[in-house]
Image (cartoon, rainbow, N blue to C red):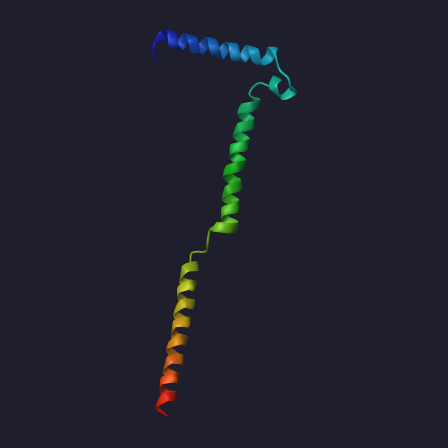
Length: 92
C-alpha cells in the first residue's frame, strides 16, 4: 500500500475511536471494545452451540451403519427363509 493509504487508514481509525466516545446513543456504545467482545462471544456461542446440536441430532455412533447392514441382512435372510418354505410347500 502507498504511504497515503496508511495515513488515511490511521486518520479514519482515530476519528472512529474519538467519535465513538463523543456521540453514543446507548450505554454499551461508550464501552471501549464492547462490539469486539460481543462479536467474539456471539461467534463462540454459535460455533459451540452448533457442535452441541450436531452431537445431539446429526452425528451417529461409529457402529450405526453396521447395525443398519445387520438389520438388512436379517430381513433378507427372513425373505429367503420364506421363499424356501413356499417352495417346499409347493412340492408336497
